Amino acid sequence: TVDVNQWFYEGRNGWWKYDERSNSELENAFNAGEPDCTLLLAGTLYNIDFQSMTQVRRSDQTRRRRVRRDTPMFPSKGIAGIKTD
Ligand code: V3L
Image 1 (cartoon, helix red, strand yellow):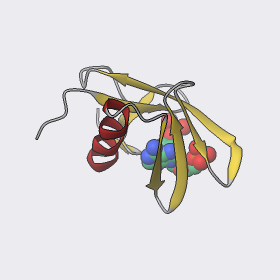
Image 2 (cartoon, rainbow, N blue to C red):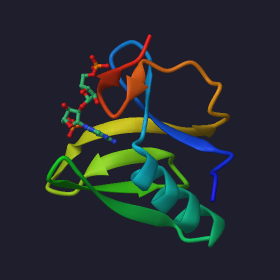
Image 3 (cartoon, rainbow, N blue to C red):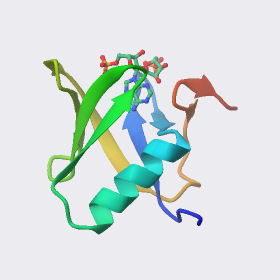
């Protein structure tokens, strides 16, 4: 099954795509009307809140990034920290 929407998290000067598995988990939670989604990203637990549209590290709430749900065509730096130009 193909996701038509892509989730992004904010980097220093642009947006990164979430990896495919995380993107599907975010889509499933968002489309189910859940308020948030917990993801294990590079060994660290994060909460993505769909009202504030932010990603927060669960062990350190000061580590916060904006997120966006957009078309996969939206310009990005790459996928999950891997640059694709
Ligand atoms: N998916 C993958 N790695 C993540 C994610 C995520 N959703 N969120 C955070 N990290 P923090 P520039 C990012 C990584 O928020 O140059 C990018 O993927 C995060 O990686 O403080 O600023 C790049 O690899 C960071 O290394 O908890 O645009 C890198 O930053 C680490 O978790 C630099 O990107 C701590 O993030």
